Structures are given as C-alpha cells and as structure tokens.
Length: 168
Length: 326
Image (cartoon, rainbow over all chains, first blue to last red; front, side):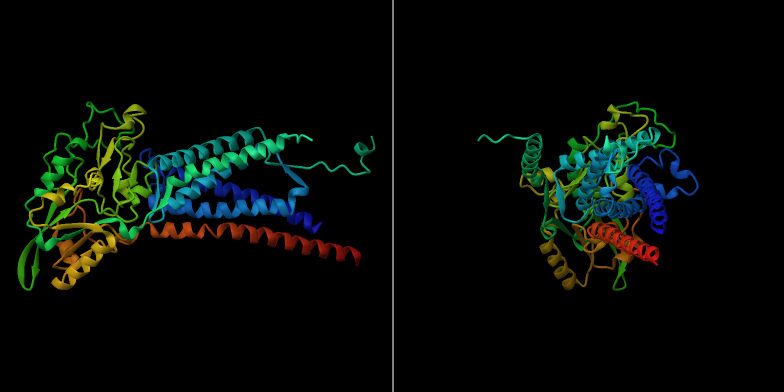
C-alpha cells in the first residue's frame, strides 16, 4: 500500500518534471534564433531574458544537461524496474526516436562549441537544421499525442493461470 | 543445410552495415584543430603611422565581396526591424561598415610626460573560440581550420546575432541582400552580416592578407599563434609594452602590442557604433562550455538516480513484507 502510493506520487512527479524540462528546452531553444526581440515577445514583462543570447544559451545547456540525466534515469528505470509491467506504445517508440535524434544532434552541437573543434560547414548547417526540425516535430508529435490521448507506455496484460483467458 | 535468413537477422545486418558505411563519411566532417597553430597576427601599434594604406588595400581586394543590395528593400514587419543601408555611404572609412572591414582608430596619450599620437588598425579579432561562429543559429558564420572566422554571404540571413554576441560588436549588416530575399523577406532575416575574413582566399592561394602586404611600416606580422605570442612577449619586454588580445575572450588571433597601457588607449579612442573598444574581455563562451563538459556526467547521474530508486523500492517492499508478517 505504502509502495503503491509512493509509486503513483513518483509517476506524476516524473510527468511534471518532464513537462517543465521540455517547455524550458523549447523556449530557450527557439530563443537561439533572433526572433523574440523582433516579435516583441521579449518585451513582455518577465520575458526580457529571451532576448539575451548568452542567458538563453546557458539555460538551454542547463536544461539539456538535466534532460540527458532524466532520459538516462527513465531508460535505466524502465530496464531495471518497469520493463515487466509496461511496454512502449507505437507513439512511445516514435517519441523515443525523436528524443534520440535531438540528444545526438544537440551533443554534436555542444562539442562544436568547444575551442578547437571543427566540423565541415555543410555538416554544421545540417546539424543545426536537423536539431531545429526534430525539435519542431517533437513538439507537434507531443501535442498530437496529447489531443489523441496516446500514451508513451501502456501496462502489459498479465495472463496467469487463474485468469479466464488462460483457461479458455 | 542452407541457413535461412530471418527478418530480424536481415534488419540487424542492414543496420550494422548502414552504421559501418556512415561512420567513415561522418568522421572527416569532425576534426580537432591545434589552436596553438591557428593563424595569428601581431600588430605593433608603435610602428603604425596611420597612413591608411591597409584600409585602402582591404577595400580594393575585397571589393568583389561587398554587398550589392536590391532596391527598394522589402517592407519589414514589424516596424521595429531596422533597415541598415550602407550602399550609399561606401566611402565611410572612419568606422566598420559592410563596405569597410578595417579602419584606423587614433588616440592621443601621454608617455614619459610627453603627448603622443597613436594609431591602431581595428578589425575582427578572429577569436580562438569565436562566439559569432559558435552561436550562429544557421552555421552561416564559420571558423576555418587555420582559425580564420568568416561569414558565408550565401546563407547568412542577417539576424545580427553574431554582432550581439561579439564582445567587440564587429559584424555589420547590409539590408537588401542575401538568402532572406528568397524566403520571407518581410517577416524573417534582414540582409547579410559582413566583417573581415582575414583574406582567407588569398591565404589559401599562399598570399598574405592585403593589409599586411601593403603596410609600408610592417606593422603586422602573421604566423602560428604560439610563435606570434612568443614574439609579442619579446617585443613587449624589449619596449616595456603592453599586450592585448592574448587572453581577451579566452584568446584571440589578433595580438596588439602597445607602448602605453590599454586602459589608457581605451580611454583615448573614440568608441561607439562600428568603433570597437579595447576593454578587457572575459571568456564569454566559458560558462556554457563548462556546462557542456558537465553533460558528460549527466548520464551517470541518471543511472545513479534509477539504481537509487530501485534500492529504495526494494527496501520499502521488504518493510511492507515484514509489517504484514507481524
């Protein structure tokens, strides 16, 4: 009983953390383009920081770091604890693939920003566009799944010897 | 007996082959250059006579790279987006513009109780880790393996982020030119950003940058960064001079040696739009890059948290079981 309550509380906490991370990553990610000042969004009280490139860059890195730790936590947790109870749904697989692409392209761009690292110009342009494109696709997929109430994971149906399904 | 190939085996083999083929193609795209060998210049301020030969040569050699804007310019939305047009002011040489990538700053300072006039050639500092390149959202600004940073006019959209993040605000915008005209000219982009590209094309042909070649006083020396730094220190020691650019923004590839402290020079020069300062500059990319390094340990934190959770659940389960037994 105690464990069940703990598990439910942790599940909703994980959901909220995930949403906050995605929101901050998307906001600071779009702020890498010089659009928030141009379109008056940075003029909204409290959003002035969106026009400060070094601030948004730092915040994007910070939440990127938290996101990587979070995703690794979820994957490890899935394989250690939840794999026998849950399975990834089709939409879950799609979102996982997009996240993998986002983390890979993001990591490549982080490495690029270290002193002395060079990528071919075409590769940088491709990575920038892939990272931005995947970010947009991820948000669109998330929104679609929210509207259609498609979950990332679903509970596995356990068929035991006592169940009517097993007997028939 | 003939071995049957299952679908799973086929997919696994296909994925493995794709990865094997992809890796050699990706690998040449990434390389780590030796920052000690980046191409640097030493500018001996005491030698400069302010003749302007370098400014003229720069304009002459780079004439073909200068913008040729289409007019009238597209109407910009919203109205706050500034139109930057230098096409009718191409003769301006007392500041940086899209048509003038190098200018001479002058300063009247005191040395040993005497008033002296110093002239300083100013252009892009070509940072070792240039924020204009690293933070360009489209990859239009790029750093060559020899350390030169340049902006590709074919893909720059003129968002001016490079100028915002540059500690010296070097790049200058010209509206009415570039890729943005082919997309949403009124709603996104605003031209192309221009700045010194260190005559990268001449260097590729084995020639010197124009400003160095024509200088009658040999104010500038070009070479690998380590050697240039060494020369700068020797010169500063011999002349009781001061160095600027070695540590600024984590290091640049333009090293100035001055007979007077740079604080004094900075006070004396005219600063403002298109006229960069000579202030000390901290490494603007350092904070984010420290976080970038910390990203390496992020996965470890994730694994530790999950293992911790499993341990805590197992403990709770054991406690529940012992409660029930009691």
